[in-house]
Image (cartoon, rainbow, N blue to C red; front, side, top):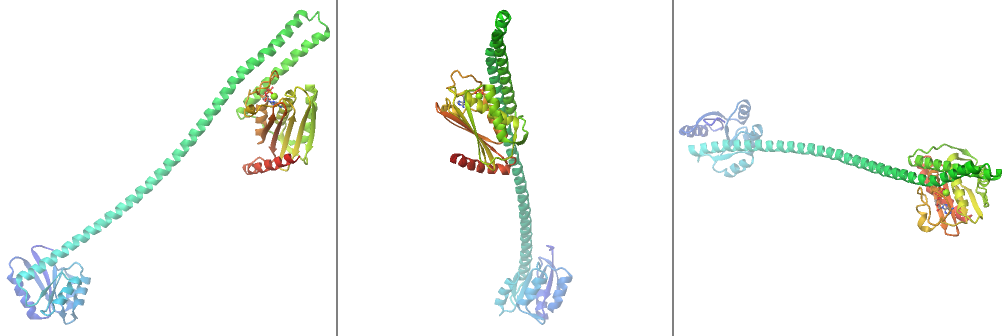
Length: 439
Ligand code: ATP
Ligand code: MG
């Protein structure tokens, strides 16, 4: 709206009333105005669409439109145009109702003076302007709200992604830390093992070296005086001692390899019964033992894939322990038990037994139980057994009572190559234990 100049559309079919209003307006000296007068509603609508007005003075009883519909339709056609309704003296109620339909004010014909008219016009214009500003502010507010919501959504998403990234970082770091910790523990274990090896080997080597040295010196100085038999005994002692030292070195190398996870594993189909029988014969020959080894094959024998070297290692160690720790001789029971998904080796002696307190550490390298007395050994045999059994995904168990005897049970699952099969490993073991109990 131009504040100096007010453009008025007067819609009034009564010429007298129209003239009167024009006169009233002319009386006013405060504002500048122009007035366009039409008598019909349709002309008014037409004009309102064609050109711009600041206010419309609208009579409610026109020849082509009467009553409140006049207000409603004008408001609909030009929503932001202030409407001042002109009503008859008897029609005050209609005036009030017109306000609800969108008019800004109403004037009662016959009671209009210039001040009242101009005030109504100005108020109407002012109110529409205020409404417009208000609507504009609301729209702005709405837009800001939407932008804000959008930004909040974006930032929430960004935060979520950062959070996810951080979570991944944390998990990865934790995994790395865990790996590092494991590697350090492994490293520590290996270095402990190595220093153990050095101290045991240096200690274990002193005695046999002294034996070799003394036999060699005796042979050098007195050999020519000795009988052939006596000389042979000393040569034999030297050979046995060298053999013992070689064995010790191979055991140490094997444990070292196993600890570093480099134990070779080449399973091949084996006839276990023949294998065990031949091994017993070899042992009895080399150990010249007075012990009797009773071998039994229980269950239905079938082809089994195992690493021959590792199998030989663990059976030899278990059988020679059974012999060594039964100083009084006696019977050693060696059972081979077949099941569909596992094979069990059970070696039972009636020797010195193992105290309960030592049983948990038996498989640690260099550990020897407290009751060995003068029986020699380095404590490597069972550590080697455990590594060989584990390489086959097997398990080893010991049951022992001091001065009664010891039983070692090794269970090797036959279908253990993949994880799914590992799940059934326990099943096979339970089944086997049931079988063993019943035998
Ligand atoms: P080596 O390295 O020469 O085999 P070792 O026999 O002392 O030495 P392991 O075979 O590892 O070592 O056995 C560890 C310990 O377990 C033995 O020192 C012994 O105390 C105990 N042990 C093993 N087998 C038996 C057994 N059948 N009866 C009694 N004690 C045993
Ligand atoms: Mg041993």
